[in-house]
Amino acid sequence: MLSYDYVKCSDLKQVFDVLQIHDHAYLLAGGTDLLVGMRGGKFAPRLLVDIKGLEELKVLKENAAGITIGAAVTLNQVAAFEPIVKSAAPLAAGAHSVGSYPIRNRATLAGNLCNASPAADTAAPLYSLAAVINLLGPDKQRSMPIGEFFLGPGKTALQNGELVHSILIPKPYPAGKGVYLKASRTGSVDLATVGVAVQSWGGKVRIAVGAVAPTPVRALAVEKAVNEGGEKDWTKVAKLVHDDISPITDLRGSREYRYHIAEVLVRRGLELTMGV
Amino acid sequence: MTKKVIVNFTVNGDHETREAEVGQTLLRFIREELHLTGTKEGCEIGECGACTVLLEGKPVNSCLVLAVELEGKELVTIEGLSKNGELDKLQQAFIDKFAFQCGYCTPGMIMAAKALLDRNPNPTDQDINVALSGNLCRCGAYQEIREAIKASAIK
Image 1 (cartoon, rainbow over the protein chains, first blue to last red):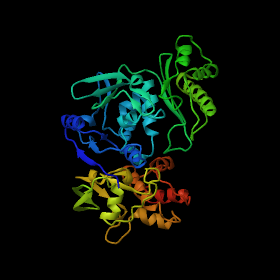
Image 2: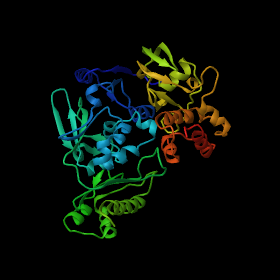
Image 3: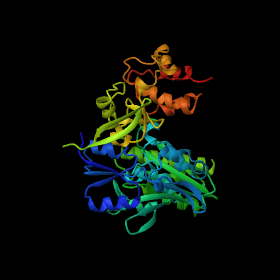
């Protein structure tokens, strides 16, 4: 049995106080990555700080600023929230493709991001939607584009004592189509071998690719060719994804396969969002 | 010494107050403290679904929940489905359709399916596939499992 202490917090002040005095304290929201990581020896917390009871972190709402998703909101809630289904389709699809239905009843969007896997299924969709991450510490709050939050595998911009408070999908939403296309070894309960999010609006696109670099990346060369060059040959333009990715070989796929499938998924994403 | 915490909860309709060890998973607590051994341990990393139970009416992998998180919650295990010695309609359908071979995945399959039927009384094949995507059957009884679920759906 694992040995550590546990505290269930009822407000954010308590969370920050606890984080300040304890070394090796880990935040517990859904726990679906944390408990697996603890069992495998990846994490060795001395204290688990349960934050999923905090009302403030359960917020899931749409207002003038956009869609706000609190840190304790589960992936099943995200995938079923009508404004997300309607206006942020890649995120609904990405959230729905994580793990299995029971896992998504526990796993949170914020947790998927904080785990900072380059293959996180919700990350590429959030890049394609220009999402903003709201961080909160004991003294200050700050916000940053999702692209600045991811620093590397397992590494984020979170500082000691800080937590992800919420994720914002800002308005105006891209008034076009959005998709998340995932290649994986099995239909569920697997990370992406490659995941591609494509969001279009008014003849332009934003494209992000997961599991092909130390962090999710934007396919900037493809975007430039479409958005500025007016390129309409999707087969040709999809090859440009190679400029922005640096995949590795691992148990889910070889480097060469990832180059190939990233190109295929970008082409399909363009076809689905921009028309054939 | 392992720290213990008092937890109050409901299991299969009965209120309980027990001591849970910090660090103990809900799965171990169910099997070793509540002695409800219908819930099975498979992978212990949330990939097989053999330990699926209903927490607050929703299916979860009990290997990925801590026992101390049970405080104030309602838990239903496979033992909670039969009433007055009568099997639940879904359990009977699993028997009638031979929806298992070794039976190890069956409690988890039934709990995931029970939750599906509670929220969607007449699911399609695709609904069933999504709802049971986290439950592995190494004997390969998937077709019969789908048939059992459809047989107990409200037509």
